[in-house]
Image 1 (tube, one colour):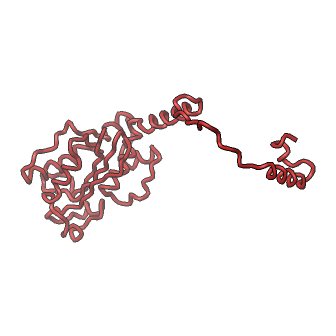
Image 2: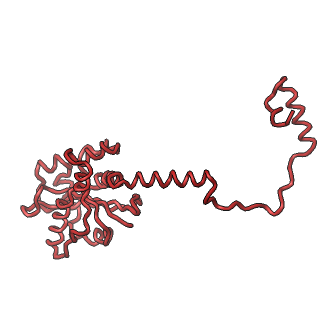
Image 3: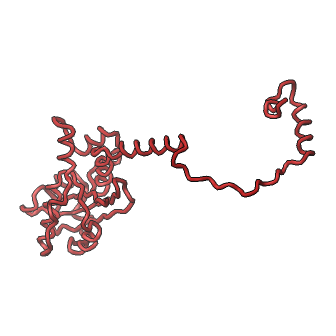
Length: 231
């Protein structure tokens, strides 16, 4: 099954008050494994960058000034996500910004029934504790040392790892791998080995064997080779 792990960065907290999208990062996973396919764009928000938002993600108005508008990346974005479920941490936040941008250019919104909210999943699995992305990385021993600031693509990569652990898919993969190993060791399910119709002729000559025994005789009273030669 194809799924898309998605994260965004914005100019603030509320698209209804003029805050805009500035970055989208997506990671494709298939059967709960990252495929290496990604989508990543910085977006010109057509407005200033509040200091509070800049402190979170470090994307300045100057950096974003020459980046494309959302309308210029929307086709690539929609093509990448296609009709796959969207895995998002605190999904209502990100999807409200994406749908606000879609509405701004008169495009249909993304249906909320496509969303898988990892924050809700984490709260059910780990009630009564903080379930921020950093907390979940620590809980599942996922290295987030590169996350000195928020970044949509990096956060999507980390969330993909968290999601796989959160739903128990990594443990299932380990169990399947162990079962597969046991099957191979026990001899069941192995690929049939092809046998030669006629064995290869031995390459050792009688002279080789005599020379080897003479060499072994120079190795002392109890050379280990004697165990193989049956001496």
